[in-house]
Length: 338
Ligand code: 13P
Ligand code: SF4
Image (cartoon, rainbow, N blue to C red):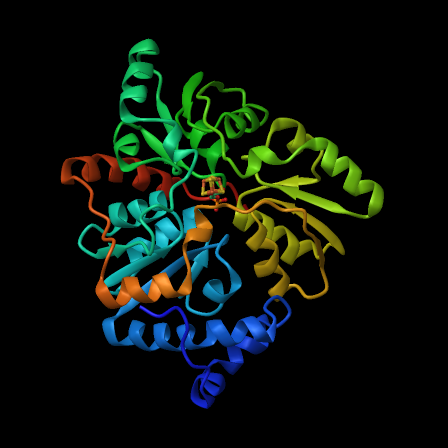
Protein backbone atom coordinates (compact mmCIF):
# COMPACT_ATOMS: atom_id res chain seq x y z
CA UNK A 1 0.00 0.00 0.00
CA UNK A 2 1.32 3.46 -0.94
CA UNK A 3 1.82 5.92 1.92
CA UNK A 4 0.99 8.97 -0.19
CA UNK A 5 -2.12 9.92 -2.13
CA UNK A 6 -3.03 12.84 -4.34
CA UNK A 7 -4.17 16.16 -2.92
CA UNK A 8 -6.78 16.75 -5.62
CA UNK A 9 -9.12 19.76 -5.87
CA UNK A 10 -11.97 17.59 -4.61
CA UNK A 11 -9.94 16.41 -1.60
CA UNK A 12 -8.88 19.99 -0.91
CA UNK A 13 -12.46 21.31 -1.05
CA UNK A 14 -13.99 18.48 0.99
CA UNK A 15 -11.38 18.71 3.77
CA UNK A 16 -11.16 22.51 3.88
CA UNK A 17 -13.50 22.94 6.91
CA UNK A 18 -11.27 20.54 8.88
CA UNK A 19 -8.11 22.32 7.77
CA UNK A 20 -9.56 25.67 8.77
CA UNK A 21 -10.09 24.26 12.23
CA UNK A 22 -6.64 22.72 12.72
CA UNK A 23 -4.41 25.10 10.78
CA UNK A 24 -3.00 26.61 14.00
CA UNK A 25 -1.41 23.23 14.80
CA UNK A 26 -0.94 21.56 11.37
CA UNK A 27 1.17 23.38 8.72
CA UNK A 28 -0.30 23.51 5.18
CA UNK A 29 2.55 21.40 3.79
CA UNK A 30 1.77 18.57 6.20
CA UNK A 31 -1.94 18.92 5.55
CA UNK A 32 -1.42 17.99 1.90
CA UNK A 33 -0.28 14.55 3.07
CA UNK A 34 -3.06 14.07 5.61
CA UNK A 35 -6.05 15.39 3.64
CA UNK A 36 -6.28 12.55 1.05
CA UNK A 37 -6.30 9.95 3.85
CA UNK A 38 -8.90 11.90 5.81
CA UNK A 39 -11.08 12.13 2.72
CA UNK A 40 -10.77 8.40 1.98
CA UNK A 41 -11.29 7.31 5.59
CA UNK A 42 -14.42 9.43 6.05
CA UNK A 43 -15.91 8.00 2.83
CA UNK A 44 -15.11 4.40 3.74
CA UNK A 45 -16.38 4.87 7.28
CA UNK A 46 -19.84 5.71 5.94
CA UNK A 47 -19.86 2.86 3.45
CA UNK A 48 -19.01 0.30 6.13
CA UNK A 49 -20.86 1.82 9.12
CA UNK A 50 -17.70 2.33 11.13
CA UNK A 51 -17.22 4.47 14.22
CA UNK A 52 -13.78 5.78 15.19
CA UNK A 53 -13.17 6.36 18.88
CA UNK A 54 -10.08 8.48 19.54
CA UNK A 55 -8.29 9.13 22.80
CA UNK A 56 -7.29 12.69 23.76
CA UNK A 57 -3.63 11.79 23.02
CA UNK A 58 -4.19 11.18 19.32
CA UNK A 59 -2.64 13.62 16.86
CA UNK A 60 -4.89 16.47 15.57
CA UNK A 61 -5.29 15.05 12.04
CA UNK A 62 -6.87 11.93 13.59
CA UNK A 63 -8.62 13.70 16.47
CA UNK A 64 -10.28 16.39 14.34
CA UNK A 65 -9.99 14.74 10.92
CA UNK A 66 -11.58 11.29 11.24
CA UNK A 67 -12.70 10.60 14.84
CA UNK A 68 -16.42 10.36 15.59
CA UNK A 69 -16.01 10.28 19.35
CA UNK A 70 -13.13 11.81 21.26
CA UNK A 71 -12.40 11.65 24.96
CA UNK A 72 -10.61 10.20 27.96
CA UNK A 73 -10.54 6.49 28.66
CA UNK A 74 -13.75 6.62 30.72
CA UNK A 75 -15.72 8.34 27.95
CA UNK A 76 -14.41 5.92 25.31
CA UNK A 77 -15.53 2.95 27.45
CA UNK A 78 -19.02 4.44 27.87
CA UNK A 79 -19.41 5.35 24.20
CA UNK A 80 -18.22 1.94 23.00
CA UNK A 81 -21.31 0.42 24.57
CA UNK A 82 -23.70 2.95 23.07
CA UNK A 83 -22.58 2.90 19.44
CA UNK A 84 -24.88 1.64 16.67
CA UNK A 85 -21.96 1.13 14.26
CA UNK A 86 -21.04 -2.35 12.99
CA UNK A 87 -17.30 -1.83 13.41
CA UNK A 88 -15.46 0.07 16.14
CA UNK A 89 -11.97 1.38 15.38
CA UNK A 90 -9.99 2.30 18.47
CA UNK A 91 -7.58 5.14 17.76
CA UNK A 92 -5.87 4.61 21.07
CA UNK A 93 -3.98 1.79 22.75
CA UNK A 94 -4.71 -1.91 23.11
CA UNK A 95 -6.30 -1.82 26.57
CA UNK A 96 -8.77 0.78 25.27
CA UNK A 97 -9.68 -1.48 22.33
CA UNK A 98 -10.16 -4.39 24.73
CA UNK A 99 -12.38 -2.25 26.95
CA UNK A 100 -14.45 -1.33 23.87
CA UNK A 101 -14.81 -5.06 23.05
CA UNK A 102 -15.76 -5.81 26.66
CA UNK A 103 -18.52 -3.21 26.47
CA UNK A 104 -19.62 -4.14 22.93
CA UNK A 105 -18.90 -7.89 22.68
CA UNK A 106 -21.03 -8.44 19.59
CA UNK A 107 -19.32 -5.73 17.55
CA UNK A 108 -16.15 -6.07 15.52
CA UNK A 109 -13.47 -4.06 17.36
CA UNK A 110 -10.28 -3.26 15.43
CA UNK A 111 -7.10 -1.47 16.42
CA UNK A 112 -4.90 0.03 13.67
CA UNK A 113 -1.70 -1.27 15.31
CA UNK A 114 -1.72 -4.31 17.59
CA UNK A 115 1.58 -3.17 19.14
CA UNK A 116 0.06 0.01 20.55
CA UNK A 117 0.45 -1.15 24.16
CA UNK A 118 0.90 0.60 27.49
CA UNK A 119 3.68 0.34 30.09
CA UNK A 120 1.09 0.24 32.88
CA UNK A 121 -0.92 -2.58 31.27
CA UNK A 122 2.32 -4.52 30.77
CA UNK A 123 3.35 -4.14 34.43
CA UNK A 124 0.87 -6.66 35.86
CA UNK A 125 -0.66 -10.05 35.05
CA UNK A 126 -3.76 -11.89 36.24
CA UNK A 127 -1.45 -14.22 38.21
CA UNK A 128 0.03 -11.26 40.09
CA UNK A 129 -3.49 -10.29 41.19
CA UNK A 130 -4.31 -13.83 42.27
CA UNK A 131 -1.22 -13.79 44.52
CA UNK A 132 -2.16 -10.41 45.99
CA UNK A 133 -5.69 -11.64 46.73
CA UNK A 134 -4.17 -14.55 48.66
CA UNK A 135 -1.90 -12.19 50.58
CA UNK A 136 -4.76 -9.80 51.49
CA UNK A 137 -7.86 -12.02 51.74
CA UNK A 138 -11.16 -10.15 51.69
CA UNK A 139 -9.56 -6.91 50.47
CA UNK A 140 -11.31 -5.61 47.33
CA UNK A 141 -9.26 -5.07 44.17
CA UNK A 142 -9.59 -1.81 42.24
CA UNK A 143 -7.88 -1.88 38.87
CA UNK A 144 -7.04 1.03 36.62
CA UNK A 145 -8.51 0.51 33.12
CA UNK A 146 -4.93 0.62 31.82
CA UNK A 147 -4.75 -3.18 32.21
CA UNK A 148 -5.44 -6.28 30.12
CA UNK A 149 -8.86 -7.98 29.99
CA UNK A 150 -7.40 -10.91 32.01
CA UNK A 151 -6.41 -8.52 34.80
CA UNK A 152 -9.82 -6.82 34.70
CA UNK A 153 -11.42 -10.26 35.04
CA UNK A 154 -9.64 -10.75 38.41
CA UNK A 155 -10.80 -7.38 39.66
CA UNK A 156 -13.77 -6.22 41.73
CA UNK A 157 -14.10 -2.86 40.04
CA UNK A 158 -12.17 -0.79 37.49
CA UNK A 159 -11.44 2.92 37.64
CA UNK A 160 -9.88 5.65 35.53
CA UNK A 161 -8.12 8.79 36.68
CA UNK A 162 -11.51 10.55 36.36
CA UNK A 163 -13.08 8.55 39.19
CA UNK A 164 -10.34 6.66 41.11
CA UNK A 165 -11.10 8.23 44.52
CA UNK A 166 -14.86 7.83 44.09
CA UNK A 167 -14.43 4.16 43.12
CA UNK A 168 -12.14 3.44 46.09
CA UNK A 169 -14.59 5.08 48.52
CA UNK A 170 -17.61 3.35 46.96
CA UNK A 171 -16.43 0.02 48.37
CA UNK A 172 -16.92 1.04 52.01
CA UNK A 173 -13.83 -0.85 53.23
CA UNK A 174 -10.85 0.33 55.33
CA UNK A 175 -8.35 -0.84 52.71
CA UNK A 176 -8.25 -1.69 49.00
CA UNK A 177 -5.72 -3.21 46.64
CA UNK A 178 -5.19 -0.55 43.95
CA UNK A 179 -3.34 -1.53 40.76
CA UNK A 180 -1.09 -1.13 38.85
CA UNK A 181 0.02 2.55 38.87
CA UNK A 182 2.07 3.38 41.96
CA UNK A 183 1.82 7.15 41.38
CA UNK A 184 -1.93 7.15 40.84
CA UNK A 185 -2.17 5.02 44.01
CA UNK A 186 -0.14 7.61 45.94
CA UNK A 187 -2.29 10.41 44.54
CA UNK A 188 -5.49 8.61 45.56
CA UNK A 189 -4.12 7.99 49.07
CA UNK A 190 -3.75 11.77 49.54
CA UNK A 191 -7.48 12.16 48.83
CA UNK A 192 -8.99 9.42 50.99
CA UNK A 193 -8.71 7.80 54.40
CA UNK A 194 -8.96 4.31 52.83
CA UNK A 195 -5.61 2.46 53.10
CA UNK A 196 -4.20 1.81 49.63
CA UNK A 197 -2.15 -1.31 48.88
CA UNK A 198 -0.37 -0.54 45.62
CA UNK A 199 1.70 -2.14 42.84
CA UNK A 200 4.90 -0.93 41.16
CA UNK A 201 3.62 -0.07 37.65
CA UNK A 202 4.40 3.30 36.08
CA UNK A 203 3.50 5.19 32.92
CA UNK A 204 6.64 5.52 30.81
CA UNK A 205 5.49 8.95 29.62
CA UNK A 206 4.43 10.63 32.86
CA UNK A 207 7.24 9.23 35.02
CA UNK A 208 9.74 11.23 32.94
CA UNK A 209 8.52 14.62 34.21
CA UNK A 210 10.38 16.16 37.13
CA UNK A 211 9.43 18.76 39.72
CA UNK A 212 12.66 20.68 39.02
CA UNK A 213 11.65 21.18 35.36
CA UNK A 214 8.29 22.58 36.52
CA UNK A 215 10.00 24.96 38.97
CA UNK A 216 12.41 26.09 36.23
CA UNK A 217 9.48 26.80 33.86
CA UNK A 218 7.66 28.82 36.53
CA UNK A 219 10.72 31.11 36.66
CA UNK A 220 10.29 31.92 32.95
CA UNK A 221 6.51 32.43 33.09
CA UNK A 222 5.39 34.04 36.33
CA UNK A 223 1.70 33.32 35.59
CA UNK A 224 2.24 29.76 34.30
CA UNK A 225 -0.61 27.44 35.32
CA UNK A 226 0.56 23.85 35.63
CA UNK A 227 -1.92 21.02 35.07
CA UNK A 228 -0.71 17.46 35.59
CA UNK A 229 -2.08 13.98 35.06
CA UNK A 230 -2.24 11.81 38.22
CA UNK A 231 0.10 9.25 36.59
CA UNK A 232 2.92 11.79 37.26
CA UNK A 233 5.39 11.33 40.13
CA UNK A 234 4.20 12.69 43.50
CA UNK A 235 6.56 15.69 43.61
CA UNK A 236 5.40 16.71 40.09
CA UNK A 237 1.78 16.62 41.25
CA UNK A 238 2.75 18.67 44.33
CA UNK A 239 4.40 21.29 42.11
CA UNK A 240 1.24 21.52 39.93
CA UNK A 241 -1.71 23.87 40.31
CA UNK A 242 -4.32 21.30 39.25
CA UNK A 243 -4.36 17.54 38.66
CA UNK A 244 -6.92 15.59 36.66
CA UNK A 245 -7.73 13.04 33.98
CA UNK A 246 -7.16 14.07 30.36
CA UNK A 247 -10.80 15.25 30.19
CA UNK A 248 -10.44 16.96 33.57
CA UNK A 249 -7.46 18.89 32.15
CA UNK A 250 -9.47 19.97 29.10
CA UNK A 251 -12.47 20.97 31.23
CA UNK A 252 -10.24 23.03 33.52
CA UNK A 253 -8.86 25.04 30.59
CA UNK A 254 -12.27 25.52 29.00
CA UNK A 255 -13.78 26.69 32.29
CA UNK A 256 -10.95 28.84 33.71
CA UNK A 257 -9.24 29.98 30.48
CA UNK A 258 -5.72 30.39 31.94
CA UNK A 259 -3.32 32.52 29.84
CA UNK A 260 -0.18 30.37 29.99
CA UNK A 261 -0.50 26.64 30.60
CA UNK A 262 1.83 23.69 30.87
CA UNK A 263 -0.03 20.38 30.44
CA UNK A 264 2.18 17.82 32.17
CA UNK A 265 1.13 14.96 29.92
CA UNK A 266 1.37 13.55 26.39
CA UNK A 267 2.29 16.09 23.67
CA UNK A 268 -0.75 15.84 21.39
CA UNK A 269 -3.09 16.93 24.17
CA UNK A 270 -1.71 20.48 23.97
CA UNK A 271 -2.25 20.59 20.18
CA UNK A 272 -5.81 19.32 20.48
CA UNK A 273 -6.74 21.68 23.29
CA UNK A 274 -5.02 24.59 21.52
CA UNK A 275 -7.42 24.21 18.57
CA UNK A 276 -10.46 24.87 20.79
CA UNK A 277 -8.71 27.42 23.05
CA UNK A 278 -6.82 29.83 20.78
CA UNK A 279 -6.32 32.41 23.54
CA UNK A 280 -4.39 30.05 25.78
CA UNK A 281 -0.64 29.75 25.26
CA UNK A 282 0.61 26.18 25.71
CA UNK A 283 4.15 25.79 26.97
CA UNK A 284 5.31 22.48 25.51
CA UNK A 285 8.19 20.53 27.01
CA UNK A 286 5.89 17.49 26.76
CA UNK A 287 6.65 13.78 26.27
CA UNK A 288 5.33 11.53 23.49
CA UNK A 289 3.61 8.20 24.17
CA UNK A 290 5.29 5.87 21.64
CA UNK A 291 2.28 3.55 21.81
CA UNK A 292 -0.34 6.21 21.06
CA UNK A 293 1.86 7.46 18.22
CA UNK A 294 1.75 4.05 16.50
CA UNK A 295 -1.74 4.98 15.29
CA UNK A 296 -1.58 6.82 11.96
CA UNK A 297 -4.08 7.75 9.24
CA UNK A 298 -2.79 5.18 6.75
CA UNK A 299 -2.98 2.41 9.37
CA UNK A 300 -6.55 3.48 10.21
CA UNK A 301 -7.48 3.30 6.53
CA UNK A 302 -5.87 -0.11 6.10
CA UNK A 303 -7.60 -1.40 9.22
CA UNK A 304 -11.06 -0.31 8.00
CA UNK A 305 -10.55 -1.49 4.43
CA UNK A 306 -9.17 -4.95 5.28
CA UNK A 307 -10.80 -5.34 8.70
CA UNK A 308 -7.45 -6.34 10.16
CA UNK A 309 -6.27 -6.44 13.80
CA UNK A 310 -9.49 -7.62 15.36
CA UNK A 311 -9.51 -7.65 19.15
CA UNK A 312 -10.56 -11.08 20.42
CA UNK A 313 -11.13 -11.86 24.09
CA UNK A 314 -11.86 -15.26 25.62
CA UNK A 315 -15.65 -15.20 26.37
CA UNK A 316 -15.23 -16.25 30.04
CA UNK A 317 -12.60 -13.57 30.61
CA UNK A 318 -14.78 -11.01 28.83
CA UNK A 319 -17.83 -11.81 30.97
CA UNK A 320 -15.89 -11.37 34.22
CA UNK A 321 -14.04 -8.26 33.03
CA UNK A 322 -17.35 -6.70 31.98
CA UNK A 323 -18.65 -6.83 35.56
CA UNK A 324 -15.67 -4.70 36.73
CA UNK A 325 -16.00 -2.19 33.89
CA UNK A 326 -19.79 -1.92 34.28
CA UNK A 327 -19.41 -1.24 38.00
CA UNK A 328 -16.99 1.56 37.19
CA UNK A 329 -19.33 3.11 34.62
CA UNK A 330 -22.22 2.98 37.09
CA UNK A 331 -20.15 4.87 39.66
CA UNK A 332 -19.44 7.59 37.06
CA UNK A 333 -17.10 10.55 37.24
CA UNK A 334 -15.78 12.15 40.41
CA UNK A 335 -17.58 15.35 39.29
CA UNK A 336 -18.99 16.67 36.02
CA UNK A 337 -15.63 18.40 35.40
CA UNK A 338 -13.27 15.54 36.33
P1 13P B 1 -7.24 9.24 30.84
O1 13P B 1 -8.07 8.19 31.46
O2 13P B 1 -7.05 10.44 31.74
O3 13P B 1 -7.71 9.58 29.48
O4 13P B 1 -5.74 8.67 30.70
C1 13P B 1 -5.44 7.53 30.00
C2 13P B 1 -4.00 7.39 29.82
O5 13P B 1 -3.53 6.44 29.26
C3 13P B 1 -3.14 8.44 30.37
O6 13P B 1 -1.82 8.16 30.14
FE1 SF4 C 1 0.03 3.95 28.82
FE2 SF4 C 1 1.36 6.09 29.61
FE3 SF4 C 1 0.89 5.74 27.02
FE4 SF4 C 1 -1.13 6.36 28.70
S1 SF4 C 1 0.62 7.64 28.16
S2 SF4 C 1 -1.15 4.79 27.11
S3 SF4 C 1 -0.49 5.26 30.55
S4 SF4 C 1 2.16 4.44 28.33
